[in-house]
Every structure is written in C-alpha cells, then in structure tokens.
Image (cartoon, rainbow over all chains, first blue to last red):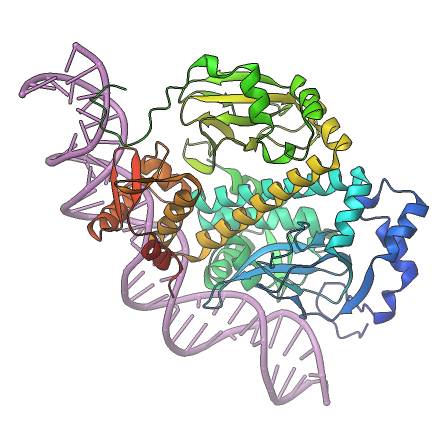
Length: 249
Length: 249
DNA sequence: GCACTAAAATGAGCTGGATCAAGTTAGTGC
DNA sequence: GCACTAACTTGATCCAGCTCATTTTAGTGC
C-alpha cells in the first residue's frame, strides 16, 4: 500500500468482494471438519451458509445474544472476549481462518457467553445451528472433527486455568507469546512476526493481568533481546528462551 | 454405620461387589449419552466396557500417561487434578456418577494432561478409545451428546478463566460453593449439605488460592451464618446470599 | 471417655502486581 | 516534514493474598 506504512503487519485490505460464493466453496473445503466431504457433499453443505464481510473492530455478536447461529472464519481474525459488568475484558480466544465459533450446541435457550469482535477486516460464514446439527447428524466425520476441536479447546482452556492459578505474570506472558507465535507467526526480518494487530491490552487480557504490567514485562523482554515490538505488533526474536522462561522451575 | 460417626457425609461403604454386570447395564442406560439407545443396543455397547472398583484416594491414571481409555463414573466421585512440577495442584473437575473422563479424542499419541483420583470409593467403567469412537460413529446421538457435554465443560472452563482473571478470592470461593451446592447438594438438617469429602485444600485448588486463605474466607462465611462446616464437609445455610456475594458489583 | 492425628484456624510479615498518574513515542494523515 | 493521537512506558504507592509458623480442634479408634 502507501509507502508510508511502517507497521510490519500485512495490510489486510480485505475487500467486500472477497466474500464471494466461489471463495466460500473453496474455503469451506479447507475448514477442518469438512475435509472428509466429497465435492458434491460440499456443494450441498455450502448452500446452507451465508457469507458476511465485517470491518476491523466490528462486533459480530454480543455476550447474552441468543445463540442460534454458528460461524466460521473464512478470512481475517476474530477475537472472543468475555466482559465483566465493570467492562473489564478477558480475551478467551483469537481465531484464524478455518476456526468456528458460537456454540455448536442445539439448546435453543442458549445465549452466547462471550462477545465476538473482528480484529482485522474479516469474512465470516454463518449457518443456522439447526442446519449444522443436521449436517453433523448426517456426516459423522463432521461431528467427530467438531468434537475433536472442542476437546482440544477444552484442554487449552484448562491449561490456561492451571497457568492463572500457579504461574507468575512473566511466565504467563512468555507462554502467551510463544503460543501466538506458533499460531500466527510468520518469518520476517524482525524475527517471527505475530501477524495480528496485538496491543498490550490484548496481551494483558490474555495473560490475566493489567496493561501496565504487560507493558513492563514486554519492556524487559525487549531489553533482553527476546522480542521486537511496536504499536500493536510483536515479533519474537528468541523463541527458545521465551519457552524456557514460561516453563522454568 | 458405627454410632460414633460424626461426619454428616453419607458413608459410601461401596463394596466391590457393587460393580457387577447387572449394575453396569442398569447404570450405562443412565449415562447421558447412552440414553437414546435401545435395550438391545445398550447390551451391545455394554460388552465393550469393563468395570473396576477403586478405594478412596486411589489414582486411576496419572498426568502424562498415554490416553487410550475413556472412563465413566458409575458410583462414587472422582477428581481431576493438574499438577505443576512443584507439586501444587489445580482441581479441574469433580465428577459424579454419569460423568465421563479421559479425552474422547482418537489421537493415539495423546496423553492425559491431568491426574484422576477417587474422592470416595468408586466404581468406574472403562472402554477402549477406539471402541468408543466406533460407537460414536455408529450412533450419531451418542456423538452429539458427547459434543454437547464437552461444549458445556468448555463453557464452564472459560467462566472459570474469567473468574480467575477478574474476581477477588472471596467471590470465587462463594461461587465455587454455590456450584458445588447445585451439583452435589443434598437436603440436611445442617442446610444444603455438599455430599462429598471436601477439604479446605480442595476448595483452595478449585478457587485458585492457598488453603490458608480459603480457611480464612470460610471462617468469615461461617461467622456470617452462610455455611456450617467441619472437617472435609460443608453445608450451605444461605445460598441466595452466597450467590449475591459471588456476583455483586 | 481418652488419646491421637490430620485438618483447620489464626497470627505476623512480606511482596507481586494493581492502581493512579504523568510523561513518551510510534505510526498515520495531511 | 509536521502535527496529532492513541498506544505505550514508566514511576510511586498500596494492599490482597501469599508464606511460614503456631495453636486449636474435629473426628476417629480404642
């Protein structure tokens, strides 16, 4: 884009027209739980979905909204945030293309218990929960993959509980950085660049601390030459050492 | 039992012979995810299970063991604990009859990432993971129920992350008490008795605090007449107030 | 009833991290 | 290049909850 750009982050520049039917079909096949389906089956499934484009920072749904729709990220990133009454946020998950969100549970009285917000421009597919349940009923491979993913998320979630209960802030942040690096990292002159707008506040909300403390820890890491960072971006220069810090003792 | 017993907790007195085939069959039908099966189907499924009796305090499997077996609690209680290297524990879940544990995921290189230990004498059914996957493949109702339960556990787990990150100890403990009351509570002269051996340490490991702090908070609750408790047992006398405390502000 | 033991209560002191409040800058738009 | 602003940094203070250590007590076995 403009030669003035300084952020090392890629400009998403995701135009609305990227959310087309053909792209949808192509992307649906890449979604983990549809991988076992044939092209014809995929075409059938595709009919049930609708696509939507969201700008960065838009809210897709809010905590407390009735949960009748399941969504899949096709392009861009989405974050799931739980808010307390006072407005403090806890960042539950950072999603990338292929990830689904919203409960896959049928229970029609369910409401979302987190808010979904785009972290970049994004293209999102939606399907009625009842339709998705039907698909799972029809194709056990789909149901099984969804179960596998949910189980994995449960395990991650429990690991985070363990960290919150037992590790000091420094280690928690080191761990969050490594995890983000693994999921969103891309090779870059600065190091392993986390391809995602990521503020100190976001980091703090992931590690369960305040943004002031997150900032202090990040300063220290930067001094120790473990990371490079600017506004809303972080690159990892020494992953092994971060990993060591997060696990030591 | 002996007239000398003081604990208000029921004496489990679960003898080995309670783990019989007929009991198994009867109980299997009560497990949430098998409820939609016919008697004949149930009999088929039953063949795949084996039953085991464990004494209180026994370890069923350890964190790091290879995870090739899925288990179901038939009688008694089981707790899932994650340990750090230093031996601190985090209590991830307290299970009751009907609950399954161990990952339902096929991935054969998986290991358990928590330790399962009996909290009372218990009867446990085991099934090979591969057999269970087959059952889920064959009966989509089973797969769907397992998914629903896993999703619910994920939601609980995320709520706990929210609490750990945002609530002070007092509220977290109040919340744990209410939750345990709902799950394990039984009417009793003392109030709503939590039918489970439950030490201050257990409580602390659930709320993410030290047993000293848990003890202090419990003393305060007792002074305020919200609970009654002794060694390893707690009864709730004023649930509405505890609920208010856990949610206030 | 008495002795025994592990659990629980309690005290004293310390500290990691929160909070509040200024400064500083990176990145952008013009 | 310059001005602008939200993001970030950094300092100073404070306290909830931890740790360590001691005393008390509930529950059990005899």
